[in-house]
Length: 488
Image 1 (spheres, rainbow, N blue to C red):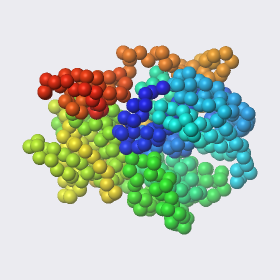
Image 2: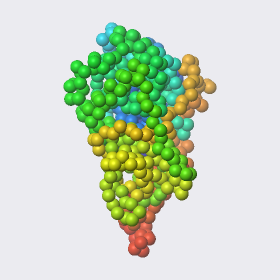
Image 3: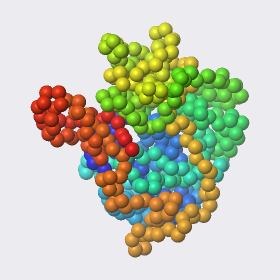
Image 4: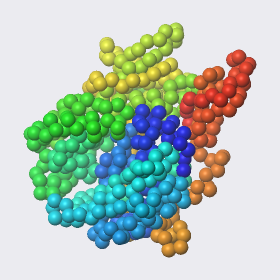
């Protein structure tokens, strides 16, 4: 299991509570266990908000539940589910040290409003920072009462933690177009805050926006299965007051900063116009300087003493949600000022400097800011309409090759011990913790907050021992380092 300090450092970087980050960490290992299990790997199809976060958009709202469509109705059985997740819990403890108490694995099979069986599970866990009484809970929503329109996809998940399985974690998930259509249908059926946030957020990711005709074809099939018509904006209006009332309660803990609900509601006419065939103007990207390159990596190598990864994540979050940010900036003359900007991209200059490409909100002029000179970043509640494509999503659009979803992809799955059925296959092999040696994996760079000296560490532990202060020639005692960057 990772150290508590790693959770705390990531919580600081993402401006979220440690318990939200810890749950994301546990969700990743839970997915590894589910899709490493012979009985579930080719039958359970991952969907919902957590699927969007873990499979497609790392800069997204954090989610708390795991939603699956089950292709084998026999799996909706309490005894079967408790047995399988008892095995998965034991395996997760052996691999990651996360405790999944068997007596706190619970499933309830019930009849849904359509008269079909569904199931809700509650699985408690004890991780690096969670309390033991009562332990936090992961909820599972399971159903066979769903039509899967497009072939599911084998997708690697985002799991940015130092004890991640060496071969990564791969899940069977909804095709992105179907995941988007499912969210759109959910917005029409229940009009909840998270559905509005998800639909608008997905629409704004222009790089992955599907063709309207194809999207409507999938959406129509999803709606027909549930016995409802295609969504219309007029049908959503009666639910607006209730949605606005629940906005903060449902979303505040899942986002670095609560976003204005009016901004998301105001985006609906453009989305429905797109469904009706309206063509949005194509924005030309900001021009690259001679020798400059666009940066799309998740973790960026930055000069010592410069902007931390936490600032970059806040910039990405604000830009993805079309919000101005205020930056504290020190110019070449040493003068410090605060500026409101629209953020668009990160570039690396020919000289190796990292630049934030933006537009000043006060005069609309394009500007580039040395990332090393940014001292602080704060999101505002002020929306903006993009003048250029926003190119801050890590790695750009997720590119995932299609793979057959029928049958096992294992080349001879092996149980871990005895008769247990969690497998290690070339496609989904979970490596033993003993494979993580001190010489492997990333190196984390921390800077002493007292003297500025930098230290390379193999864990996200900023605790620094006694060392010489290169400025005063005296010793620094028991200081704590600030995170600078990650080296590979």
